[in-house]
Length: 176
Image (cartoon, rainbow, N blue to C red; front, side, top):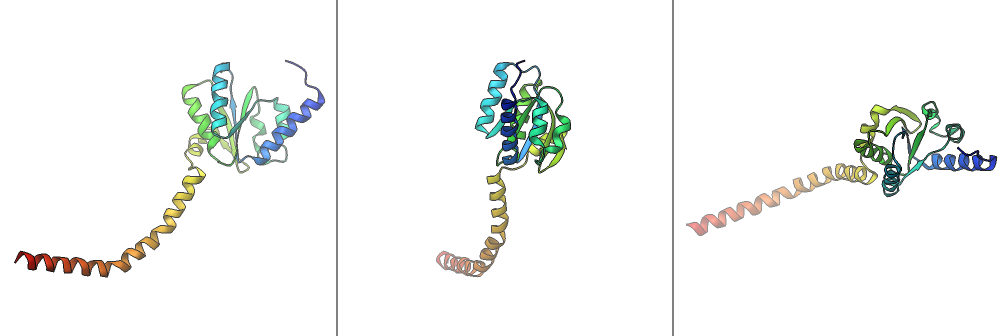
């Protein structure tokens, strides 16, 4: 392992700190045993999902996460860990790590943090199942639209009933 100069260490701390300030969630996972090809595949999938993966020395990461919403996760920084920062979408990192861990049992989630709260690694699946921002907005709009649609159906029902009655009378006269 090469020795980092002080300037390099400061740059790493600043970089991780800036990413942490802009992120909505953080997942810490042990990546021991993953091949270079597996890591490349994971990084490719992460770029597509707008998730930033970082590997850095734990002492530097602890400093970087100090005074951020992810400070609660510093006790989980033991051994070689992979940090997965999710940008705007809260569950993107959890979804990425969960799906990748299904096929690669060497990637083990240690902890995750959302909104300044430390969550157990067993809650990864629950977080991954959270709707995306677009899905949440669509659900909210559907809930908001339902009462208006029902009111419109109720208001138009007397006219529709009259039209059906007239059509039935017409059909009855034509049959006779």
